[in-house]
Length: 518
Image 1 (cartoon, rainbow, N blue to C red):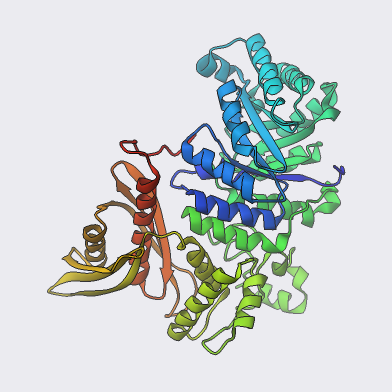
Image 2 (image 1 turned 135 degrees about the vertical axis):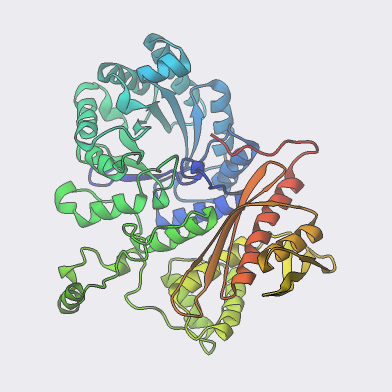
């Protein structure tokens, strides 16, 4: 690896999926993994195979079907974990086993109840064991930023001697400050005698809002791999955001002198895909990918931009996937223009999915005068995620108003069966629709969370509904978008019901609800 190229290790599908409220099924993980490959990340950490059968299946399918990046599976420093990870990544052309073991005094005392000598021995044995399955082994001393530096040097040296090819230094609880974290990386570079035999990596959490700052400090001190997630999702306050690290290095190469292989033009499309599939919205003022990231309202700023873009923009919006102006498409637009705009937005669809998306676009164009980029992104992502649905909405009708009992009539089709229709009353039209869906599907759910927002501007804006439901202790989220908020609400609820139905179909008889993972 060239010293002026940073490896991007994306852990959206592992650490990112651990975000409270986020859960992805296998087809959704595969869709994101394919998009990450188009983004040209170097490593995809596809999951934690020992955590659940679903995690194992997702890692194995990604390893089999996604080409380009290295596919990694996470494992504790235990033979059973390593066996499971090795089996999951086995189909990959380029594979990695990522082994972690806590090293801080607080973890040793309260979690592992082991002495430092025992930890060194376990680390060595785990790395050596993993090397039986593949040559690319990453070792992470968990909670490294709170580990005694002398002991950290000892553990890192031992892991490299045992065969680790990447050493990751996690700021597991987001405790570090940039100066101290950079100094820790520099200390390891200076004091670990065999450090040149491994790639030094940074993995920072955002509990104090410093994940990106700490990562950049570590990179400046000599780290050559950054572990990050799309939109910065992850445990608690999240992880370092991939898009922010990549664009900081690109924009301030004068300071860091290092770049990455990321195709930055696909950043926005990837961000939107992850947001839709996880149900975690991106705040409007989020750096790089937020709706306001390249918006200018102040008169002084607008005047400066019109005279010279660089007066108030340090990056070109086109470089991360934004358009300077909203795309205007209508019902008279052709398939070729549609295909080209979808490609410009960073999506690479096979012909059958493109046809389905184009048909949906034509229906939407009859409802709206203008179709914006955000509309197209939502439309494409919804078409892709709906292909494995068990229940499909055929039509629905609601009645509500003052002094009127809200009533809904819904018709659903279950796969190739004849459509079924039923009706119910509720506290409002949405509640009535949901009660009717419960009756038809036989999968009654309790609504835990319901959110709605406008994707685009105008009275005919697309509305997006995101919700969470519970069925027999299983919690899933659903999402959908439409110019009709009631339709979006119905489709979002049905999206969640389909996830439960697929889970029930794949689970063995009598099996408890699947765990979310670690």
